Image (cartoon, rainbow, N blue to C red; front, side):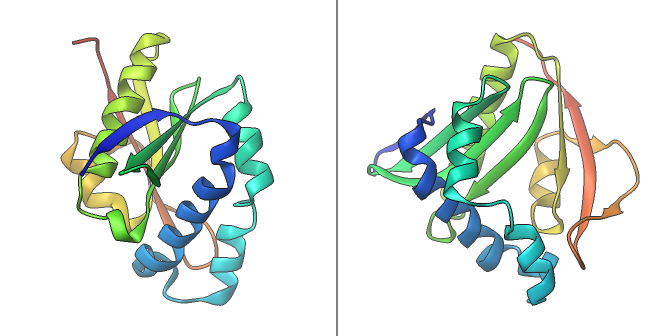
Length: 159
């Protein structure tokens, strides 16, 4: 098994979009509880065209994770230090993909001078978000439909 994390390119948009959509539908069931209205709202902006725009944006750093050449994870970091996306394909769960993506996002953040990362965690990702050192940075809030998001942050430093 060959695993790699690299900068995403616009031609990754369709595969990245599919990974994120499948991750939300299949892995985030504790968040959306199968509620069709919630899923529709959560997935509304997850289109190949938007992914192509986010990947090409000068305001973001987009990373793709691959196993044996197949795109299985996608991470998106704003240059203000917000992790907007960190999703893994269902078939790649528990294979180190999210840890690799997160470590790579952190290195990219440090390289551009970011010293604090923030994110809004789903319930599904909350425990893994806390394990890597993120702490609550505010009260939980309603996100899409029946979902709740949990604001988190952590300081990072060059190693």
